[in-house]
Length: 402
Image (cartoon, rainbow, N blue to C red; front, side, top):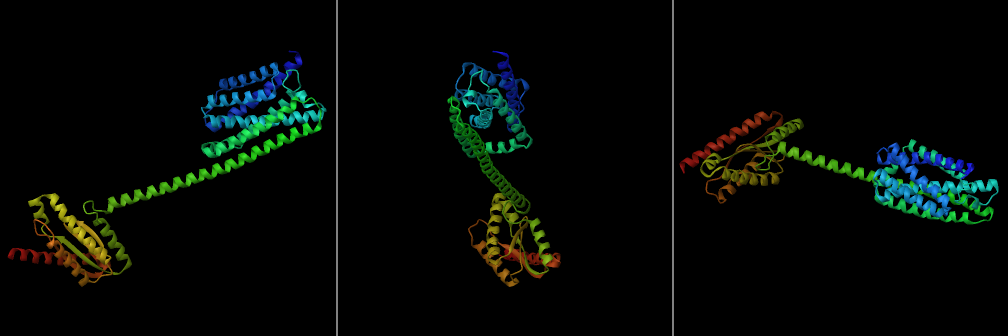
């Protein structure tokens, strides 16, 4: 190797080193995993060693760039633990841009110097180092610009969407094969202008198609990303709504009967008072619950309460009223679309239903029904409670006589 050849090797080595550094930094940003200087130098060394050996052996350029792709993809996979599709997607991007720029500058220099493109074959003694230097230098600025523009973040999003990545990688494969065909021109010894201009057109066309493919793949991946985000937000809102409903149920539902509890009753009373309308209100008490608990056990007492709540729920649904378990053996029913006689008649029917049902003990309810201005609801409650108490006294007097 003479001095000129050594200078060419050093020039291409320096240009490839800086290109390799920018490319691996770019890949590291996608992976969000830094690469050590020692590991990067090892990656640079083995690939450039291959370039040097290929030139010494004067292998066809097609073989040179094919092995370069294989080695670069393996290095990306080993350095960042990407899967094969992502590793070779990145490697193909690097190789296509590098190969296109090399074809472009080799064709351009051959035109400017009026020499055949075969002058830039893979022999160590050829003058290929100058267009190679220009190509790798252009790639250094390109990769640096992509890193500065945070393009790696967009590419990372695309690589998470498998369908978009597969489409992008397969398109890269076809562009790569197209460029490999262009390398066959370096085996032609002629100095035809058409071959040179075709090389420039092919390089520009390949870069154009690659850019369009990247833009399209990024658009599709971004659409999928925002659809996933929308789905996550919708799922989170649904979950939050379910959580709110659970909290509402825990706060305002009686666990035994499933009815609204006293807390919600007081809240609804305040709402009715805010409307300033009249309401019909009934206080309801289950007769003989303590005796049932003492004689038959609390489980039987719970069954008694559940049966009463079921019958009262049917009435409240039919009359479009609100029903609450006030506490213990007491219930409250209220609404503004029913008069006193209608509600009293419905509750009396409930009594008949309870008395006629199968049971080992007498079952019935006592109640008081009032109607009035809900802005003075404490008075309404007291009046309904007093009526219910009078009803209960009559019930027990009747039971004592029988």
